[in-house]
Length: 102
Image 1 (cartoon, rainbow, N blue to C red):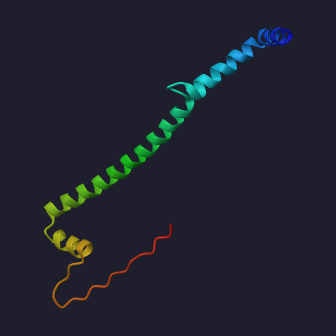
Image 2: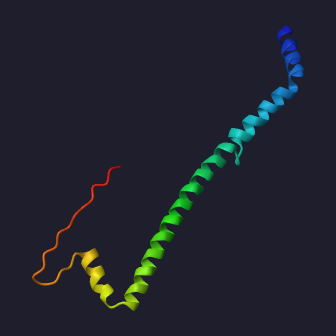
């Protein structure tokens, strides 16, 4: 009975601290909208925004090429030579690959 009384005395003295710590544990880790999940969602959102920006740039480049093809007839030949390595008869092509260090 003495242990129970001392435990009850400890709880009464530190009730606000215990309540605050319980609140931090529930909100920080156990809740459906916990801080840990929010940080994970923020990281994922940042990654997805980066992907959106990458695809937006790629889309703009492709749109620019498409417009160039519609306006300039010589652009078809240039793109075929650059991208698909096509060549004219009696012509040699040298391809230089860049080493990309990661």
